[in-house]
Amino acid sequence: MSLLQPYFQQCTSAAFSISFPSHSFYVSVSKRTFISCCSSQSQTALVDSPVDSKIAERDEIRLGLPSKGRMAADTLDLLKDCQLSVKQVNPRQYVAQIPQLSNLEVWFQRPKDIVRKLLSGDLDLGIVGLDTVSEYGQGNEDLIIVHDALDYGDCRLSLAIPKYGIFENINSLRELAEMPQWTVEKPLRVATGFTYLGPKFMKEHGLKHVIFSTADGALEAAPAMGIADAILDLVSSGTTLRENNLKEIEGGVVLESQAVLVASRKALIQRKGALDTTHEILERFEAHLRALGQFTVTANMRGGSAEEVAERVLTQPSLAGLQGPTVCPVFCKRDGKVTADYYAIVICVPKKALYKSVQQLRAIGGSGVLISPLTYIFDEETPRWRELLSKLGI
Image (cartoon, rainbow, N blue to C red; front, side, top):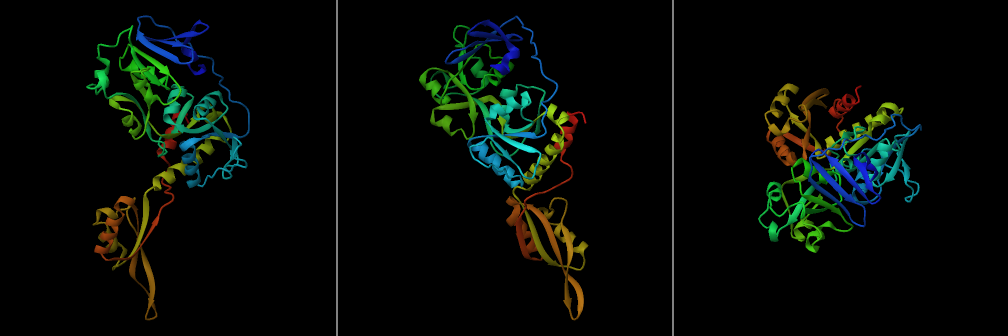
């Protein structure tokens, strides 16, 4: 409840009202929480809660990582692949170190607590899903997305309805909104754990008669049990929805999500070393992710000059590499003289074009083809770093 505090006006000891322009939501605090949305002409001014402009004084920089589940394992794998292995003395401890970053502490937390502690100043950096940042950060300007695509944890926050009954022929959000069944007395019931993004999405898309409920357990069972008409939940493959006779609808995707690196604006500006550490982490991530699925291909080719060999290579579209082929002489000693009858070609090739590239090299006289996977590609300064500096006004 604390993250929604700026929108709450206390009504009774057990109920709160939340008001937005032309919409209001009702929250009942009980074993199951309900948030209802209905049309309203009144408007309640939003009062920002006081925010401390100073950060907590400490020497170390704190990085929050997910403590459990697939996201936790994939995050540790990413850091390891970037030569930033996390060292934990005791697996039961919530604090750890990354030896390559001596001024950094790693704190294992629940994803939603990572966002909350970034806002409170207890953490400086974090890796969580974009859905978590959006739900618990609620657009707070102190949160900055440093890297928005860490290439794991892909999912989408999507609205799903039953395939049967009154929803059998409903296939879009517009059709759902136009159903005459939804009234003030009988609103559309949506089960979700996203009690900020859900009402916000419905308001933005003009669905006025909606009530949200949060319940423990698998949300997919809620429509079949009769406690909800629809669900709003994270979807990866969609298999679980299909197995429970549910379907996604056109226009019903609230958010596309994957793992992101997020930071506190105040920490980056005020905490000594935070910006430099963020720069190093970002560069390592970018170099590793850029190299995923890329291979170095080296081959020898007979030719009269480097230019002649390069011209032959560039006639093949799959052999252009990142910025063009590297061509250099291969020296050997023949009849007592050092000569360069062969040239070595080095190019970078994506995995999907690997075999085709080998065939093309052979076709133009390449031999002795060697292939090795790339670990990192450090290019010129990453655009994400320039964007971060721009956001910070640096």
